Length: 116
Image (cartoon, rainbow, N blue to C red; front, side, top):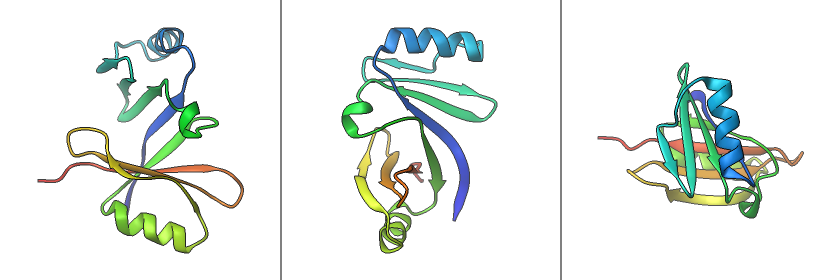
């Protein structure tokens, strides 16, 4: 089960320029501003900037589907023919992410927030 796409991550080469662009677009300061990730929240959407995204195989923005059980969902996608790009791992605070590539090369992200 998903809660929809509530997060999108952009791979960026120049974090400072990307941050300035999204500050202008969203009219807000980032809630997270670290050398490895800058995050904005706007209208219920989480927009992230990842300066290491290209090195991780991101070729463009990646939508992250918020799921209840990331491991079960990842397994189902792999059984359906997806190619694993990034296995499940914790990005902080118990938030888990993973990503796959579909048969057409589209990137699909999965995100499970910490529970409890």
